[in-house]
Length: 303
Image (cartoon, rainbow, N blue to C red; front, side, top):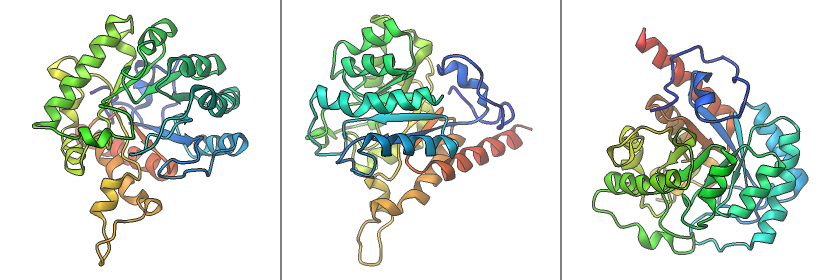
């Protein structure tokens, strides 16, 4: 898997140039992507960073805490969420992207719409994170190909309002891998450079809790979707409900969203040790510590 931890010193600075997956390979550890939700209804922090000034301040804070990439999104993808229209998504996202990029941050735009991705790239974003893997908007892959920017292709089976209805698998690892392979092939057929593709198994998207654990336990197989070439893998487990259900209290109540960061750190450590290219998280500082520990551990094992 790309971005194996421990191959070089963990403290090496990012190389100059566009933040493609290959250009980050010399960091020597799993990357950390900080989340900026410019939404009123995200499951983890809905409304907290909805205003542009608050979102920009939060993005700068995440970068100061060590985020390698700041991921800006204007549409909630929590289970059951309704879509926002394109105009509103643009209104939420573009000013934040523009200010963070002007401040020198590496910004990713989290969107399923090609028009939003295009405007965000014009505003300074340097990566497109598409949770639909190109299925929601047929124009996305050609846009990414023309822009020649890194493209995160996530496993997806439908919009948030009813995606859990499609959480039906016989062999979740094989089926997710096969479906990711189809999306990667479609992106390449549209002209996307394979070296710019990052894959994401879509933890929590059309997945039951047991499906999430199976995918996380077999990240090495996910990195080679359909048994083909290996791709960098982005893992997003931060504060998700399968962690809350694992960490129930004495009365059987799930752990609240805001109290799942320690569990997220544990998973970031494990994902980094398994070779993940990047973890997408809400609480950046402890997860940066986690991936640095994983990198040093891997280096010691290699020696």
